[in-house]
Length: 520
Image 1 (cartoon, rainbow, N blue to C red):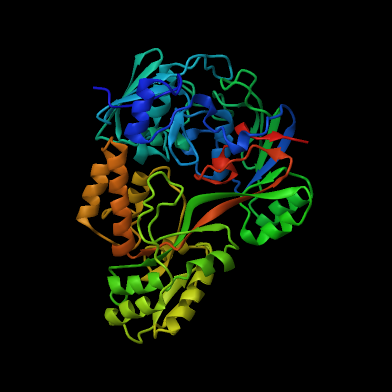
Image 2: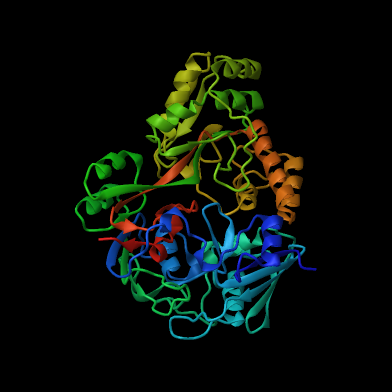
């Protein structure tokens, strides 16, 4: 029984419309990014130099080993995935021409025709089977093995068709296939000193920790793309050096700019800042299993003491979106807009604080540069808390060792969470009772059951309702306070066009190379 399908043969197909209503997934072939970013006709030609914000001698072009943002940019230059995530994190067809499922458990993928690797070899089902199967091989050491483990059988059912059987239903499996690690490589590839993929650029040079050069793939399967002739990409970990390179005209785009650098960039003619509102958040953690502060009333008091507007304007200089103490952003297709916004309310904070019974007991709140903005946020809480009798002591610790020694261990502190491609992945990692990173030690069997049920629900409206209910539970019952979602910021020359926000990361979801052009 076919219940779940995406296709690329045109928006009028009955199956595509069924998919749209069943799962919220839109399908528009290779042109899904059309809109304001592409309103101006792209120009062909030119070379750019681009700087990311990480660099290592362990840099890789092996999709299974990607760990740094520069790895994601590099692999997106050379490879494609079966699906790609759009600005709402909905999966769109990429190398997959269509995807069908039987009860969200058995997935059948038909491949796009006419796709070739950089060496001229045609893409076949064998390449997809090899690419996906290697993640479950312990010898590979894939970063994505926890995600790949659900694929209990991967087989070619025709030269251009792959069937994947999951261990249990997962309606968002097309989202999983669109994550970076599931780039498709040639069958049998074991040498990753270079990259041979189906992507927009061919690998001219790859020197780990130094630079990568890609040249335009003239036989790319997306008509007209890419627009640039060549990209030189490298990492500059120090932000000051990265911004200075942009100001000096040495690079065309600099990823990972902090708010404090934006005025400097905007003040120089010919430069601009590109903002990507995303699911990055620095969250206030109140451990519910802590002996003194571990009660829900104390957690609620802390949440009501968060002056979100002041934090946004003073700490992030406006480059943030107001949060509501749950991890789903307003741009996400599963966001529950009907939950009332929690406001800064000292009176309600005082009510819950007095109910907690903590009294004048001093409560340490651990902060670190490792959790962006945590020190400034904690000072604001300390000042607000003092007015209601809450005695918070801001305890500053270095970034080095913070995640090992303080995160998940401090009774009150902060985390710093990057976007995840799906609600299921995000909630499974951070809010499920047995989650490895259950930051506030919140345990609710009803939440766990709802999460499992939503994972297998193929009706989009019902799944959205389930995720909406879970957002409310996290907001009101967990020990996590999420005041803001921070934006990714990139500095660039104004002549670099085509950037559009993809909220899995900065630099257009680390996929700017395929989409930008020079208008100069």
